[in-house]
Length: 542
Image (cartoon, rainbow, N blue to C red; front, side, top):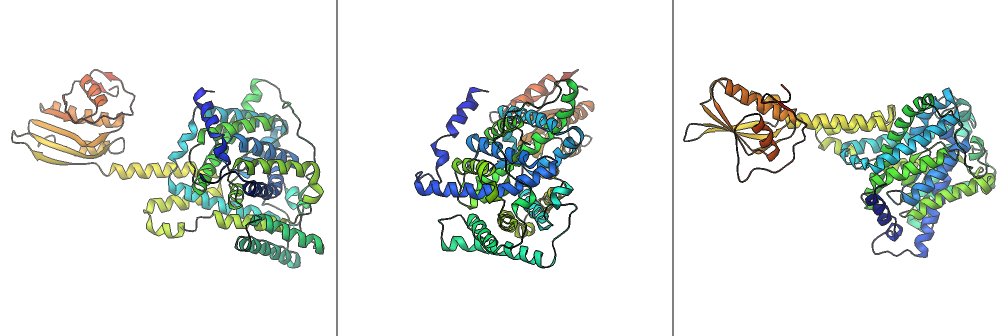
């Protein structure tokens, strides 16, 4: 790992990570808030990890171990204090086919390779490319994920055990009806009301924890017959033990696990980096993308050797943590340790918690996550941006967030290229010497190259033509090829063309091609994104 990256880690993982605000010291009050926030997150992690384990077709402890190991490691060395990581549905839906065809041992090997790929992405600092995700894509991602979180809670309104028997969260099973359904909905509503009211009464206890605690106490005290955590599966277990995946170490195994590893690594990093940006907007912190990639990679590599299904950042749990006041690494570490305590010692107690209380917490997360202002924004932003917001939202719900983000970025990039392609034009005038000057306006790149070529009146222009790029910018090889095409047309009819205000690399390329470029004191100085070859005086290999 490069020394610069290690130095960055050492700089980031410091006492500054343990502070809520620059002026606020790490005090007993702050530690209490962080620990209670971690407890709240841990309680919400249990049913999520169990449900995602069912989705992937593995034992619930495989999901719980992943939530503990991934959560602990990323909390310690991740790129953004306050983020929560663990087993996620986005990864589970990819794993299910691998487990069904090859078994859980191949899943562990896949998770190890997935982690190594993520470490490589972090070392190469590819995390910085998350900045290419436009804001409309982020809005669509947030809205879509809020809907996905909401829909994921619907499985809790089924007869206990139906999720486990069907092997996935939303299909099959018998829905609650009549009195049990009304009781479930009533407890969900009470939980949401407590979460809403608690901050207005006291801030001593995080609102989600108060909602879970009060509703659980009522259900246990009155013996209400409602679905509970223990109805999903037992979470009792021991410490995760080191385990080398029992798969043949040969080329055939590599061919099986590589495609899954690449997909899982990409989905995990996209979800983690988008969550990192979202948490950063709330907490007012930036950076840490490459560090987060490495942290996710290390955590998945380790969890693959300890019988976990792997994971990534969890936006729902991250929002619970942030809304509960968690701002430091303490909260994430506490959440992971509390989860381990549940597995080792407190399983019988945790299994008594009603699912309705946890559903109420997640519904409040949905309300807080959804960008409600996007309804106003849709009427004010350009039509293309509004379309991207809706498209990413729909694709996130229909497919998954990785596909949605890629689709959103591609559509946004194409729209940007099209808009800039239409900006190319030129103002013309004649000099006292009789030369015609074309003052090019707008960027010249692959999208506008055809329009650039069509601007010139080769037959009607005088013997000397000046093309001035002072108000333009030559971006890529397609732009250079367009300049070459125009120059060739004028040369073919015996007319002289002079190119002005081009950058130095354009000078070099066009001079090699044999065209006249006039140097100016105010020539621009910018790099040209082009790989080129010059043959017989023509750019682009012609």
